[in-house]
Image 1 (cartoon, rainbow over the protein chains, first blue to last red):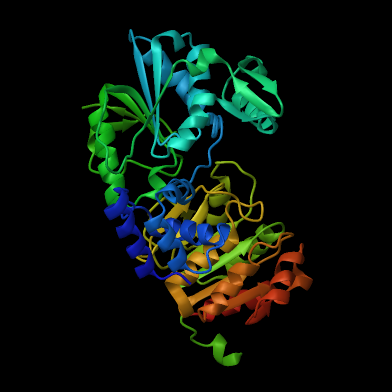
Image 2: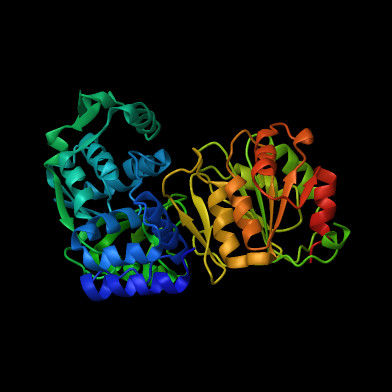
Length: 269
Length: 193
């Protein structure tokens, strides 16, 4: 049994020794991930896990990877992507250059979905997609653009529901059970580590997507991150969140207007 | 048992169900008093789609306000909360909900175990958890966690369940306080304070 005080000690270690600040992460989820890691890596007790984290910097990478959630998929919530196609991209298309930020992109399935949308709107040539995450290892997967072939059937169905009319398999090459997405897509993706807790704004964007990331933060950190997004959006830029996340009750609520039923907001001031 | 039925203090009621559980809820919800003095959270395995028709359908069966959980929402007595499709439901010590999109558990998201275990840590002996019909082993470890902290574990009588596996599996592997059919379940819930 891991006590709340144990988690506090561990979080203090992570900040003091490595500069990672997880103190404002959703505690229920974080604790569950720590318990899960203890069992995955067969630590006999919490004390052993803490000792390993404190004394083995090479274990830190695994710890951060496993304690954060890296589950994502292509074209998740097809109606959301349909709305991007029909309502957001036509407006972005009036700009000479389009910058998109995928904040907390994990292994990049959403980034590639977005690149496909931009290509089909004939906008990919003048777009750049910035993909950031705090885990360097997931970013390596974004760079490669290789995903399990077994998932392509489901992704293809979601793609079609999102309004896609091409043959989805034309976007990748199948090999050894993997699907490698075309270089035409990946060469428009810029990859960098960025920690939403501690790093600041680094550019001005026309569209920021951060879906199912804020649910892992407490209210105060959610509010801080939303301010960071506000500061990183150009006038009339768009912000997209997960289906159960909201700007309501946040400090930046009045500066944004929700587009429709999807969780997409337009910056109005 | 009679003693338990009277004035058992409940600060959160959880109801978990899989295949065959909706029929039970459609019968159960109209039988519940209109001013439940505790919150109720439903964790149901369902088709992975974001449409809100299920919460509207459930809301039409009860006078207690019913809606899908929003992330970091405060848990308010008298409200019936439905776990959104494709998220796990967790509970924070300040008695707010957190949603979680991590790996499926028992091929399920939401997983009943995940919510039962999380709520057990926060509510301890003031937690009441009910497991309904289903063909999956989800919920059993959750009920074990509920019993470990002194909470109350209830299962639907497998003989009345469309899919008896889930409540039966829980009875095999966990201590269970009550085995109820739908009418008994309603009387029990209405007796909780």
